[in-house]
Image (cartoon, rainbow, N blue to C red; front, side, top):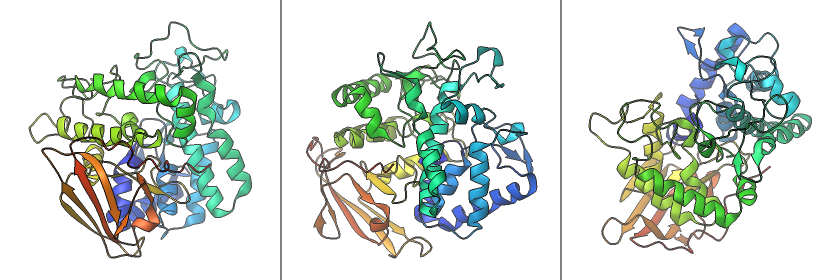
Length: 419
């Protein structure tokens, strides 16, 4: 479920919460049987996944979205073990280097491991540090919701592990070796050297738990210019690896829509005071990266993975997304560029107080994708986000769309990043 919190589970939580609940129960059966959550499972056996086991993000997202028809204590126990324990951990449970992260606050890079991990470090040290920082944040939020103060304090501290790899001079994530020093001969576009299926330019934005801190470290104006330039450049290669039919073709690109680590990045403009750029670039990605001909899906560097790329498209054409995957105690939805004139989502009483969420648009001009204004149940909406609980009370969310950016809309406040 690597990256599924930016597509599949968010969509399940809106429209199919019973599927989400069943999925968690199935994972708990694995835990009861094997004593560990699975990073990859085939025929009820552990197999090699991506090695980072992000299942607790899925669990916490379910709980904080109100999906709770399972053994909550057992789920929390499984997630806690997943995030803290490395003793006698089987390969198929992933996170073999989580002990290094817990003890050091980051995972050191060890080139001797050859696509693996040992007691000194990992060849994917930087990307693991970023991912473990996010999953630590998720555990902190879940612990806070359950009133487990000591766990909260431990995990919220670990969630800042990524800052140990942030190079203040380069304004990039930069792997550190086992000696604690930044690696030399550093190439921000080089994959596999500290980064799994990506590079430093892509992974620097992997701070969904605290984008406001990342933005402040880079500098707000520089952040917006840098990210806008990344998408401008990426558009030349269809937002990935161009027309190269290989699932890994975008790993050396500045952005790669065809793989999970980048799927939230276009939505970060909502946090940096420029939501019109989220509207622009999510629309462009949907319009140019996706399609209905044979090369799409598993074509030009596109790794569909359990329907994740398709689910991402659905969310983005609805104009709804959550960078934090539903994991804060009070989850939000951020708004993008809705594509349809009318969408009706039948809400489920498991998680919603309302019966229907209706999203409508008034499209003005030729190919309008910029939000001019918005109305929620008859009242003007001036933010580019809403609390999930409010949205799922049901009603009508209406957008007026135009061909020119309305740069002031949606800037009244930034989406909250509760710590």
